[in-house]
Amino acid sequence: MPDFKPVRGMRDLLIEETKQLNLIISNARKVAKYYNYGEVTTPIVESHELVSAKSSDEIRNRMFTFQDLGDRTVALRPEFTASIVRLVTTVLKKAPRPMRLFSVGSVYRYDEPQRGRYREFWQSNYELMGSNRPEADAEMILLTSYLLKSLGLKNYFFKVGHIGIVKGILDQEQVDEKTQKEVLHLMDKKEYAEAFSQLKKDNVKSVLQSLVEVKGDDIFKITEEMRLQVKDYSKAKDAAINLIEILKLVTSSGCSIDSIQPTFSRGLEYYTGLIFEVQVPELEISLGGGGRYDRLIELFGGISTPAVGVAHGLDRINLALQIQGFESGDKKIKKIFVIPISEDLRIKALNIAEELRNSGLFVELEVMGRKVGKALEYANKLKMDYAIIAGKSELKEGSVVLRNLIKHEQTTVKLENLLKKIQE
Ligand code: AMP
Image 1 (cartoon, rainbow, N blue to C red):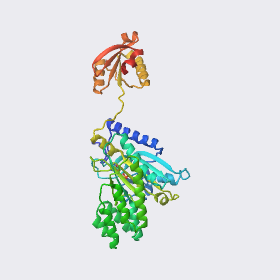
Image 2 (tube, protein in one colour):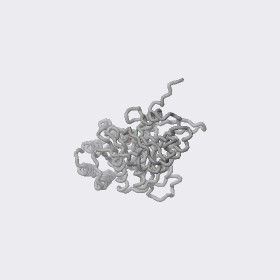
Image 3 (cartoon, helix red, strand yellow):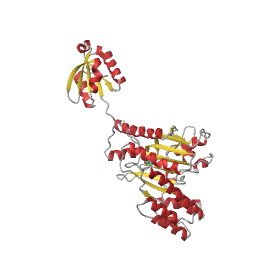
């Protein structure tokens, strides 16, 4: 037999890992509920044309792309935004705005596998379409903070930027699209000298240089200084003012922003305004990120619609929780193992198990026909709380033996008192 293993970059999530992922997913759903995002489910397989239309080269070159049997070029979705924009420009074209949509599921990128970087990973994704106001931008940061806080994550911090500042300068200086893309990409990677060498005019280089050099702890002072530096570039100045408004809204709700990154572009070509990422000190990779993309819907053939969104990397959130010593806070529900002593008591044992399940307990029934000793060994191995041993003589009296597997004690209990005794 060949040695079957998951394909490189793919992982099996075993019971505990799946439980952990599901807990994060259920918190993400809770966030969607509280902020009133409707959940939609879109296909994992999308047309290559759709998912490659407006993502960055970085993502485009790392897609799982193949021909299906009908000779269509398809790809596994590398993110959710393209699918959501497809909905908004087609079946949801006439739905009332603003539209808040939530999705959760796996996405696929041919990244180099390492800690926190996989080829199949999970994201929760929130998109708010129809509003160009800073309240909508602020909501992306606030709901991200809500999610991380609800999971008990500590010391997470936000890095925030605004693509409109640098783009506003480059547009006004009539730098062509291709050069703009190159400059933004290099500045995002902090390769400033290389970025500036793409530009012809010294005044453009110097204003960008001065933006890069703005430093300090006070985010409002920094943004104000940026605003002054770009005062001769009307669109860039508006972008700085927009960023200040967003920051005011976010911080007034008690969420702190830790740094302003004037040259942030996050590798996705479609951003037009706010851009942000969230991290924890223990990991150098981001747990989530998002921003404003006001032109994407139009580029996909829809009616011009401003939009803002965020995607959270659930595997990385999980990793951060593990590193910080995660406590699930999951109320411990008692686990019970029901063992019939003989074949003829199977029905009675099954009835007891069903009744306890209906009362909210986690109950497993012995289904291997094992003797009590062997069955108890198994229950102990699985760290169950109680075993209920259904024997003929006890059942005749309307009772069973209740064994506390933690304290190694057992008593005979009337069936009607069983639940009360377990819950004591
Ligand atoms: P993006 O869609 O690139 O904005 O990414 C959003 C989030 O997805 C990031 O902040 C990460 O938390 C997560 N992410 C991106 N790439 C990977 C990967 N290869 N493995 C695990 N998580 C990832």
